[in-house]
Length: 201
Image (cartoon, rainbow, N blue to C red):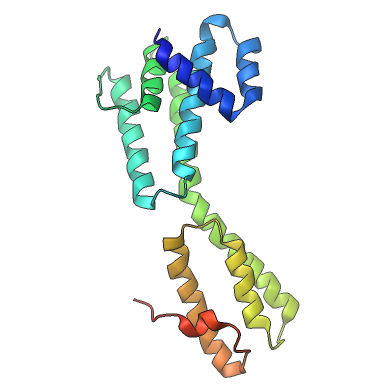
C-alpha cells in the first residue's frame, strides 16, 4: 500500500473535516481506513479545485475532462503519468478495488457526477436567485422613484458568487434594460453604473 498517498489523504481529511477523520478512524474496518481517507481526500480536493475563484470556466471544464479520462483509464488498467499528488490518491484507491462493477466504482463515478452537476448548475442557480430577489424588490417598491436603482443593487448583491467574467456580461444586459427604463421614468442619477455600461457585443 502506498504510504505517501495514505499520509496525504489523512492530512487532507484532517484539515477538511475532523468529524470525517474520526469517523474513519473509529468506525471503519482497519484494512479499509486508508482507502476511506483516500476517497474523502480526492473528492474534497476535486470539489475545492472546481469551487476555486482563481479558475476560469475553461479551466474547470478541462479539469473535469481530465479526471473523467483518468477514472476511465484506471478502470481499463491504463497507467497514466504526469499526475498530481492528489490524482495519485485516486490511482491507489482504484488499484484496491475488489471487483468488477463494484460498489467503489459506482461511488467514484456517482460522486464525480454530483460534483460536475454542481459546477454546471451553480451559476444558473445564482442567476435565478438574483432574478428572484430583484423581482421581490420590484414588488416591494412599485413605482417609487428609486425602484430601478434598488432592484439593480439587490441583483448585484445576490450574484456576488458568480465569476466576474460571467457577471459582467449579464449585468450589462440588465443595466442596459434598466437604463432605457430610467430615461423614460426620470429615475435618479445616482445609478451611475447604468450610464457607464458599454453597448452589448
